[in-house]
Length: 372
Image (cartoon, rainbow, N blue to C red; front, side, top):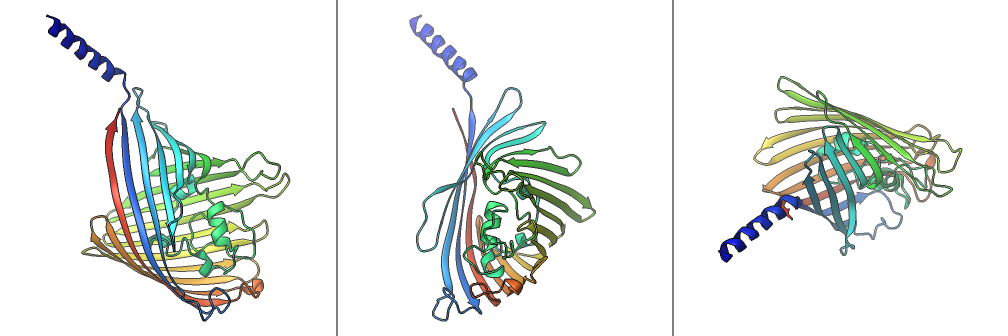
């Protein structure tokens, strides 16, 4: 009788514990890129002079953890932590690339924390067709070679440029978007192929921190016979750093069309470097899937400023080969011709040359487990 009583009590306790314990799904994914980069530049100034090796190894590693829970009311809540380490000669310290929480339901999704804004999530650029980071993270080669070139600043800080004489970026996505900054983002549920999103970032409470940002993004998916595609548009507006300063804007629009093994993207973007200087970027590209893990791509990019006659023309071609599940190899070649125009000086001369990238990318899909 005692054993029966103890067994019944233990069973009741287990049932009660299960009924009152929140179960959470934890998923972990990861990716690593290893890249060999070789430069052939027309520049002679340091550090790109005749004695420079002009080649380099680099790596970029991400580990992403997502915690998700489904509530009794039907909401999905969770948090994301994406850790990254980047290195050339040696690995850098591990830093949080993104960290935010989310709430999903029939109303859409709310994201709170350090994540990309709605513009980044809903826009497109033809540079997406080529190998990883072929254009996106190497704007200094194509847009004015200065320590404070706009590509390295504007693309990462959103309009925060210390040198308005440089071109803004080398691809036509939303250049002035919120990039892993603390913000509030709302994504509406898709309605008949239409997806909308809006983000708001507060610049802070200091006297010179009035540059709050508002971003709006939209994507429309369509299908006609064997053709599928998406239309993209986004706009970002940033207030002046101090009260009374003029605001600056950034916008992007694109079309992405796929039919069988063929894909084509056309995109155009404008980005205010200041209230008087705007960089205009147009890129267009095609991609063809040959089968057997081989994908070919070609992208053309034109960049110009509305004043000062500063321009850059870039042609990028690439090959992607799927070595095995989760392992890809990329060979990318970019040829560029940069004209400094009125901004030419000893540190920012005209430049033409090429850059070759060989990238090996490993990615591990999500591994999910349930924890109490």
